[in-house]
Amino acid sequence: MMRQAGRYLPEYREIRATVPTFLDFCYSPKLATEATLQPIRRFGFDAAILFSDILVVPDALGQKVSFEQGEGPRLPPIEDLAGLAALRDQIDLERLSPVFETIDRLKTALPSATSLIGFCGAPWTVASYMVAGRGTPDQKPARLFAYQKPDLFQNLIDLLVQASIDYLERQFEAGVESVQIFDSWAGVLPVTEFERWCLKPISDITAGLKARVPHARVIAFPRGVGSHLEAFISHPGINALGLDTSADLTWVAQQIHPKKTVQGNLDPLALIAGGRALDQSVDRIKSAFSGRPYIFNLGHGITPETPIAHVEQMVARVRAK
Image (cartoon, rainbow, N blue to C red; front, side, top):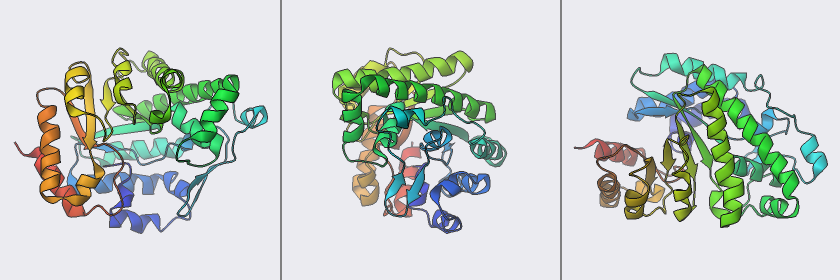
């Protein structure tokens, strides 16, 4: 609902048109602050999530990132040892200083009752872009790289784990109250690869972060992993789990929710449909997760054609007693 607000808010599109590239937008504290605040002004959500992008991390590691209009991100692909060696050995937090300034501005601008959530991409998902040089439908380049050059890929993952710890620690220092780790492409991994490239890196990030910031609250969102979601239950550093659209509500309510706070998982298409279908979907989710800590959200990103009136309908339905 928050991170991709620009897909459906006209006021976002107006300010997006004032900068030449998306990365320029992310690195403008004034504009990123405004983009974060816009959904709060319209809908009064309980929390704001920092406006930025997961690919600021490879950018701060020295891999050039650009965004092509209508085509998404572009990076020089990492294909071998030379590509990996071209990266910095640690994240350049000075490069990310505009992000931290945005957080500082938001702490002043947000209503006192509105929480601020920071985020980063999980190592597997970020690595998939770094290896392929772009988004791909099945993450084939990264998956092949991991099979064919596992030691090199492990080095890349280890670098991203440390970079993520450093980045999230600095977000907490700037003023966020919790963070979410997005593993958007976790669902393409078979079980053994899932444990190595998804579960362990996220666990390592949370452990490293909490060693530095003991009060840190962390939401993990491993999209598309199905019953593998259970593997996250035993990790005390993970405070909440995001659910994708396909998650079975009954199973989650029985197996996950008694042990972890959950977040999700309204179908973005139900939000487009509106009307009775939307009301019924909201009611099913509320019913499944009543009585325990729960964060209402979508199960994936909001789509550009979403009517604003349907978001208003959803918010009213969620808050109805």
